[in-house]
Image (cartoon, rainbow, N blue to C red; front, top):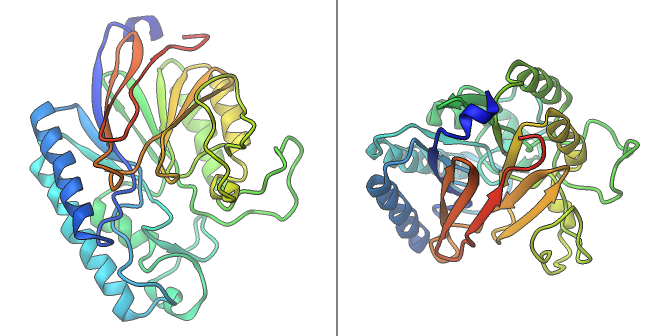
Length: 303
């Protein structure tokens, strides 16, 4: 089945870190992305999160909650202009969470408690965007796409065996990991692409992985990745059919390889109108726009 899929091409547009409501200029760059997608007519588009941000900092109040919610409603509606499906994942600037995972919280809980993230709940985000869950998967042309939610607090306080020693600020919770295990098994014959707003690996100055770009310059923000991302990477490698994983969050380009899987960090749309056209056939082609770097990556081992 995997060999047959190599003869089937799929195209999707991908954006990251629009940070709408932060600047009128950001809104214009987002519209340029949509205009490009209207012309290109991909099979689908997907946004990597940090889509519509808060209008001001501070503890959540109605005066902060309502502008972020209304901004999300307004900005998400622009995707209705496209003739293809649109997907999105949760970024750390999109929602607020207390513990994360499957917690059931409302906006009153955000008003009453200190919390990570910003001023609307995950449920509100999903209700506006129409996404089926905080994590989910979908198929297009025989390829399998997986969306993860890294916006959760750690399940524990002690790094587990195999941890790379640098403590990240985000987490893939146990319920989500169990779902991912089943989803990978249920789709074992399909080539897969994974999406997560935050990176599943940190990028130390001395480099890491099995290949890729020169690492990001040290900025003292290694905690901005998924703390137990190494566990997820091991799952993707063991599956043997994961071609790549796309992330945003860092706002700059990055490509590295772990266990035969390509990990691509996209440049932010608000950095010079950066986005990518992605084509999969017998290779993974990333056509960059703005400050986004272009890559042509072969299928890894086992594919």
